[in-house]
Length: 184
Image 1 (cartoon, rainbow, N blue to C red):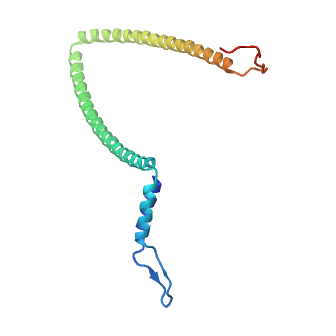
Image 2 (tube, rainbow, N blue to C red; image 1 turned 120 degrees about the vertical axis):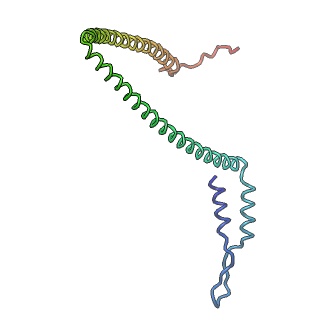
Image 3 (cartoon, rainbow, N blue to C red; image 1 turned 135 degrees about the vertical axis):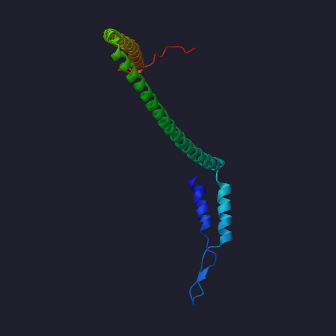
């Protein structure tokens, strides 16, 4: 792939007019037609795989650039969505807080309801604490069971690997092949 680019650069390096030193009949320079012909011959002699690889590399670069643009656009859209969701969440939180304040004021006005709601609140909190503890223990047990199963599977796999290694290991003593054995 670099070879094709180098050929392009060589093609661009031709000198338009040969130069000479004043008073000296010595000319130097590059013959543009001769160089172009040589470059064309070199390109024609390159293997098709190299040309295909160069095209594939160019396509890969194009796809990479396209993917980078897609990622940038997706990231920008995600940031906009996140900002929008955050604003909506803040508005919803403010609405919920306002409703809670109104409810609180109403409950303060009704003292019996306040006492009852405090008792219910405490009961709900205790129940939630119990449920939370029970869920946590269940989750820990589940994680322990999964890890135990994984340990068992890995143990079997290691046993199989070790058996395979022992089976594949060369014998400590090289035994000569039996000479009277007939091969079918």
